[in-house]
Image (tube, rainbow, N blue to C red; front, side):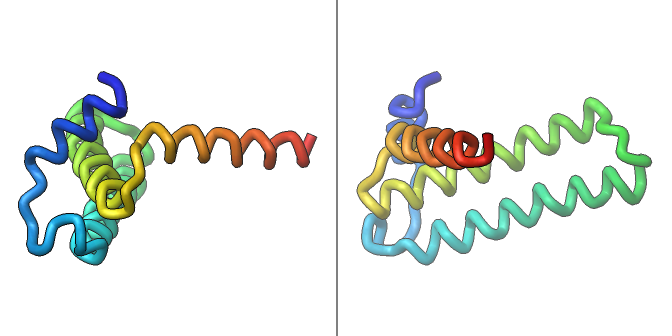
Length: 101
């Protein structure tokens, strides 16, 4: 699936107050979902000796999908596309990498 397709599909499921005028709502959701990812990884270290089981991988896949949804919603609120965010990020990282080489 391409970023544009994902963002369009995700937009259809975005039901929250003051849509496209409310960056706070998806930002708080993003923080919450990222925290859930971090909590799962913490438990991998604490309970599973750092071993990622198939069950845990599935949980992470689910939570990372929620993170992606909220990133998409934040992008919509800012009038950005996921593709342009990704392209900007890759360019930024390439410049940083080049400076360190």
